[in-house]
Length: 116
Image (cartoon, rainbow, N blue to C red):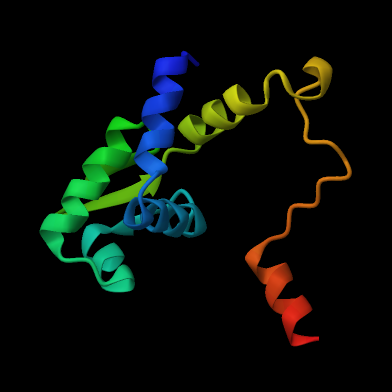
């Protein structure tokens, strides 16, 4: 991935609504969600949602497909993979992995810890 492309992808995520949309679509998986469902879930009006989806699409992180009358949006997992690979390619002396001492915790794991 070129630096310019990575900057565009990171810029697409650098806004609260766009980050929320992207995270929601990652959770939805490859089947994605209709624009109406995304808007309802996040409380975004259609014009605002379209603006943010266009930004995420330009950043290579979201893709849309027509299904009947609806446009279904999903995270572009290959775009996400390329961005993560770009961000970690020089990590750890070129071994491209997060150091073992760095703990990444999912939302579900945080909920279990908080509930305990």
